[in-house]
Length: 277
Ligand SMILES: [Zn+2]
Image 1 (cartoon, rainbow, N blue to C red):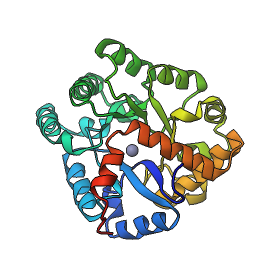
Image 2 (image 1 turned 30 degrees about the vertical axis):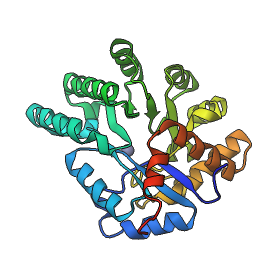
Image 3 (image 1 turned 30 degrees about the horizontal axis):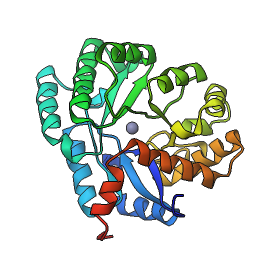
Image 4 (image 1 turned 60 degrees about the horizontal axis):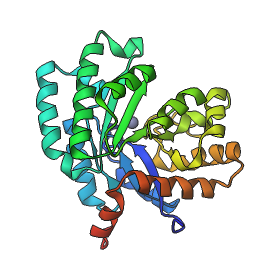
């Protein structure tokens, strides 16, 4: 069992510049609500550095995740991406996971970047193979394309999670067959999101994670403000209703799942057993 109040937000961005000046406050507020560990989603080299600073401040509460997010890749030149990949390979040892990595083929995001996105995604899959770090995947309007890439490059040994899964049960099954965990966030709290509700009802509990994706993807209860990590309580409540379970059971189960996926998590807790906070 998970000790009461030792729950995990499986994905968020506490290093995001929008949290400037607010980080201690939102971390305190989440911890007061029993959320004690915050897994990050990497964006690019500047973000990794900020994550490290935060981790120095909260050594037993921050899960480092280094990777090149599709948005970062789209915004940077080819040579900058190659340099960042080298830095990533050199620094990945410090992180619990590699990501966010993936494909985002929404037309307003993509802007003729498909080839570049594929290339950087494939390079990170290779790094996941070599490093045996689990992957944090960002896949939007590119589920089938990503599955084809894994058919070619193989699934890395520690597999990973699809962050902010927001698809149908059919799509969920495709990922589950690959051994990937599915992380569900704020979008599940929208009453009209029937497709995701159906998927969550069918999903096996042992492959489920919950996330805030802070400061984005606020559930309706947090609409109009930056989404804080404590909002995973809303996600747990909604999933609990769909699964006929108590939200605390959802938090317990997803926290235990997190420990199974991120093999470095318990080692980090042990090595920071005397937290400075
Ligand atoms: Zn994210």
